[in-house]
Figure: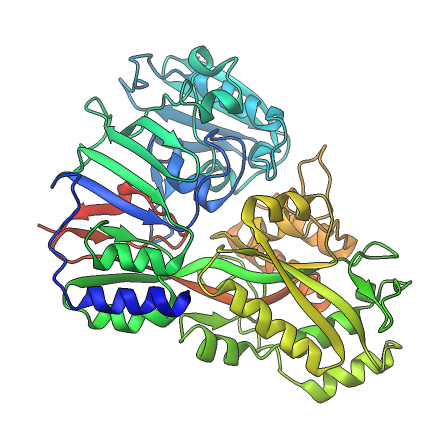
Length: 524
């Protein structure tokens, strides 16, 4: 089937793609790999949700694609003192139905974050230190925190603002069926068909510059070959998650432009270091292993050394990525400076396994999502091959993303691969490897319930340190503690690519992997 699709795509490349898209010259049609897990802006902190919903809803502040925090609904903000931030909202902003934006809506949005049922990845940690929101006047609010919070503005880039009047009783189902899809964004929601497409129209009353596209259609195409074929035929204007093996060919095509950038995301393995008996880990006869070998740091180091990261990037991803030497990517602030590469050393890995009491290895299953990033299944298979070489007989099981994340959150796996993206190393640690504490809203993505008190202490100090130099040094120490304990096994930093019809569209590539019309402009 793959050979047929690729052959079909190659045939299509021989014919001109002259915007056969029947939607019209002022309609942008995008084919995207991932669809949202829900349309509720506070349901799931995932890239696909965040990207699509930003067309309809706005945060108070946001990162631009250069990593700088920019005003959105808040035209300005300032630090009053170590525990107080003041935000000034833009004048005259209205939701799509005409309801005015007020400071009370921001307070409502903050309060709603922890209360969204069945969230597979909560936004609650973004406001974990917010103790009070004071309405100063019709456009100004003051946010009081329980401790110094130097990253509050960065955290709030993730929070899309809802209306207390329109969304006070709204459920996730109300967003999914469209009734609650009323925001302040550049585009108004028209329709959403799960598994098929989403449609939006330009908001004529948008508070910012008018959107260049009258209508936007986003088609969900998980199959990479189908996306490339649709672009080559001119059925869509833009695709994301360009298959790594197709980047060079598409770059050479005069009708197509490729837009790529290094991302702020890391692909990593997350081992179960907590349970005495882990699922999917057995001896060579298939009997459960007790104690769980993944609890031994020597085993985790051996598994990390077994991965040929440079080979994965060069051979499987055609150079579309960078081998990871720590959890946070190069774009992230506060990472370990001058960290050496993780060695690929099969002999040393075997020796470490023997020291840990597993000279003959063991068996396990490695899980991952299918279609989460280009080449993800191939990367999983390469990791499994590396583990097999050191005696850990590994099989791979991939699952649809919604199923995978639900099961990962339920702790159904011994070790799985996923990604995390952030411009801040401290937030990466706080979200993924900080000791899980729902009350303090720490470790919301710590699906394996890892705990390292030494790392926690350094991180907590960094998270309340207002001085940038000292904060970055503390974050780097916390990162080093996590890496020495092999809390996670970083594999690679991802490069992300979009491709579009050259005569139709230009795309400003997002390090956060965001695919939406906000970054697309007409070619002419």
